[in-house]
Every structure is written in structure tokens, then in C-alpha cells.
Image (cartoon, rainbow, N blue to C red):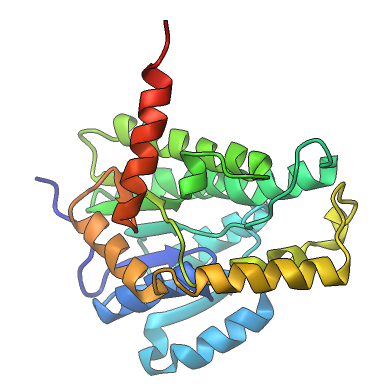
Length: 275
């Protein structure tokens, strides 16, 4: 059985690592003795994460990263190689949870959601996969999809288009990596107590021409509803522990809630109900 890379002194990089699931993964890996490069696009989240992780000292390194920017990915690899030499765990977690009808969506909606949720994972793999394979030590890639990467929710067409792509990418990558030193897993979380509800407010100016613009009252109502639902979900630290266990066991899929089983069975049955 391939040795897993969750070992003291190893190095991980986590995108979207300054809040939510990403921060939960970072905290669990640091607790396991790893050095972690914490990347995020939001300066406010990075500042809070620096305070949260202060006790980790120089085992937590912070690097601003827009996952849709190829040049910034090259800079991230340069940082890793110059500071640590090798990377062992790559957690491609950054994403935006924005919903909306495809009938109303604009080019900006499609481009923003897919550039972060799918292209951000593709660029991470493209940037670090050759490095991970070349150094020959136990390594692992985890990409965060969603239950929306297996089942399309209401108004989730664009989001699921990207997240289904992440599942396909990681399934294909896992097959290609058989016999190599690198494992691959896809994380498909259900409800987790995160800040995913506020992503619409962080939409970059370049992508403001949305086809489903909402008033301030509508945004506040959506956020309040999402907070209420997500508050009942998993704690990000719990999810981080599940990710660690998934890496150690080299799981193909990492789920956060056993209750999704019935949903997956219904989808399986629907797919097989052809005549």
C-alpha cells in the first residue's frame, strides 16, 4: 500500500485556505505536524487566519492567490520550491457558491463561476502535478467539489457544471496516477458551516454584469436563509479531519454526511432506468 504523506515536516498547500473548509483543512494538517502554505484571494480572511494560526509560527506561510490566474500559480510554485523544496499535499479547495438560473445568467456569471470552481482546480493540477510526480515521495491531491458535483440543485446549473467537471477531473487523474507516488481524491461536502453565503458580495468588478442581479434586500434574505441552513452543517474542523483520513486511506471520494447516500442511490437508479 502506498505510504501517505500526512507526516510531520511534510509540506501542504491549501487554496481558499483562510476560511471555511480550507481553514479547517489547514488547522488539521498543522496539528499533524505539517508546514502549510495558506492561500486565499481575500485579504480580510487572510488577516483573520493569520491571527487564528499565530501559534503555528513559521509552519504557516501565507500567500495571496487568485486561483484563476496562471501567473499567480507559477509564483506559488516558485515560493514552495524556494522555501521548502518539495510539496507533498495539494488541496484545491477555493470556490464560489453562487446560484442562479441559466436562463438569466450572463457571460460574466458563467466565466466567473467556472474560472474559479473548475479552472482554478485545473491550473493547480497543471502547475504542481509534474512537481509532485518528479520528486517521488508520497504525495496527494485533493480537490473540493460538492454534492452539487454529483446532483444538480435548484438554480445550481452553472455551479454544478463546474463541480461535475471537478469530479471528472479527479476521477480521471486518479486512474492516470495508478502506480505513481501521487494519490488523488475528490471532496464532495454537503452542508458545512462556512461563509459560502457571502460569495456574491465578493464578485470582482470584471464580472459584475450579472444576468441575475439582486437587490440588497434579496441578498440579505438569501444570506439569512443560507446561514440558518449551514449553521446546522458540519464544522470545518470536522471536515478537515475527514480530509486527513481520506488522504491517509487514499480514498477516491470523501463525503461529509452519510445522509447523502439516499440521494446518490436515487441518482444511480435514475441513470439506470433506461429502456
